[in-house]
Structures are given as C-alpha cells and as structure tokens.
Image (cartoon, rainbow, N blue to C red):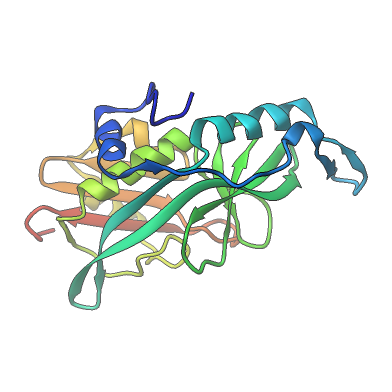
Length: 230
C-alpha cells in the first residue's frame, strides 16, 4: 500500500510532515521489472532476479508518484537561507549489479547533482558518485524521517558555516564533533551508520559520511540551534 495511504512504521513527526507537504501524482508508463533483462557483473544479459523484482516493484507500489518540497535552513557566509528542494520518488530505468545484490535508480532530489539516487535490493538508500554504491540511509523510511527533521528545523539557525549539499559539506574533526553532540539525544528512526542525528529542545546535529568516492569517506556535519547560539 502507498505510504500516503498507510504510513505504518513512520514516526508521528514523519507522518505529520507527509500530511503537510506530500502529494501523489500519476507515474509514467514503464515496463515492469518482471519483464526486464539486466546485465550482471560479468556483463551477461539475464532475466531480472527475484530479489530485484520484489524490491523495485515494492518501491514503486509504496512510493511511486510521491512528491514533496523539502525545506532546509542553511548558512552561506554570514547569511541564513531557507532552501526549498523538490523530491520525486519515481523509478528511473537504471539497474546496476553490485558486489552483493543489485541497485536501481530513482529521481530523488530534483537538483543538478554529481550523484545518482539509488535503492539497494537489501533496502538501503544510497547514491553513486561515479564509483560503487554509497550507503546514505538504512532504508527509505529512514530517509523520510531525516527529511521530516530537516523540515522541522527550517526555522532554526545553522550554527556552522558550510555548503548546503551532502557531497560538499564542511568536514569536522573528532573533538569538535564530540562537543557538538554532547548532551543531545540520538534520533534512531532517522539514523544509520552513514547518517546520524542528535537533537534536544534547543539544538540539533546531523553527522554523515559525505557523498563521495573518497576513501575513507570524510565526515560532514550540519548543526542548528533554536536561538542561533552554539
């Protein structure tokens, strides 16, 4: 069932976010994954495997046609801006064999970007920046939970300078990171190994692996406070 009809598994915050901003639009005609042939890691054309059919068609059923505008509070120089970006949850044609399993493309954020948006057959949301699959979130619901948090913080003040994009954010060292998250509570529904959130009533911090093929992937941070103080 579509997420707008049955938001089971999402937090009250994410449900409220979708009720307020999300719409469902018709999806363009496409060939069902059941009838696709794909190239495996050796380059051979093979029938789409069952795990790919189940995950890709499940994504289409659950999220197809979903649209929303996501607000983000960012700092550029000394100025605060609220950036508005449109997200589309429609499938693209791309299907890729990974070291284990498969990934498939979808539109994602409607912005000029150096990455492609993917879902892995194990459920993870990730991107490709020209190389291998890069995990971003453990699942699409985790992604939506993070978006709900970003939207909730749109009226807060960023307390670190840095680019507003996760492939070009300002990196951070261990001591400063520890200071930023001190006293904050983790937000598990929006967090995973590559993208973690901490919040309180007055401050919020997002720590994530940059969307880049660099090894190891650098750590980036976004932080906000309700009143603009660190």
